[in-house]
Image (tube, rainbow, N blue to C red; front, side, top):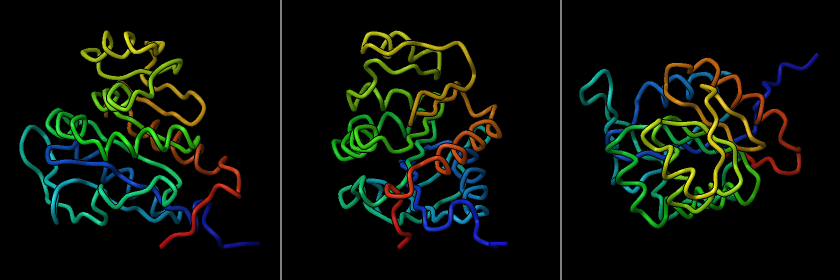
Amino acid sequence: MSDQKRLSGMTVAVLVANGFEEIVMTDTQKALAAEGAAIRIISHEIGLANGWHEGTWGHNFYIDTRITDALPSDFDGLLVPGGERSIAALRENAHARRVVKGMMEAGKLVAIVGDAVEMLVAAEAARGRKVTGAEASRARVEAMGAVWSEAPLTVDGNLVTTASSEDLEGLIAAVIDSLVAAPEGERQQAA
């Protein structure tokens, strides 16, 4: 009997900017780490990124990798928490768009929460995908060729989207299931 955890040797990037939804990152980080995954926070911020928690600024989190140095080939999955300020900044960042698009094109897990669905639009990676997200993003996402789902959680191949952070347990379960199902040859070695 093996004591190996299900996500041992896997690395998941969390793409953030100041104002990201802190609880999405911290709860998912804890669950993935408990399963053996390494978590790397990537951002254009320098040194630290400030989360948003319960209507105010939350904690600061150390940035593991500058977005300019992040390559999709370095990660097995990508989590993009919502957060209006964070997504507004990330949408405008060419490197953030490159990482999202690269992960989608490589068929690697991309988990998107709430208004972070806008990153699919910015990265031109929404066409033909079934998604859910913040209702305010619906028209832009549909205009880019995505099919909108009314479900609070939608899984479309390597893409997991949620309407909000209210169903974190469902999001975390879908992320873990998607990572476990990834073919062995596509898994990266944890740094």
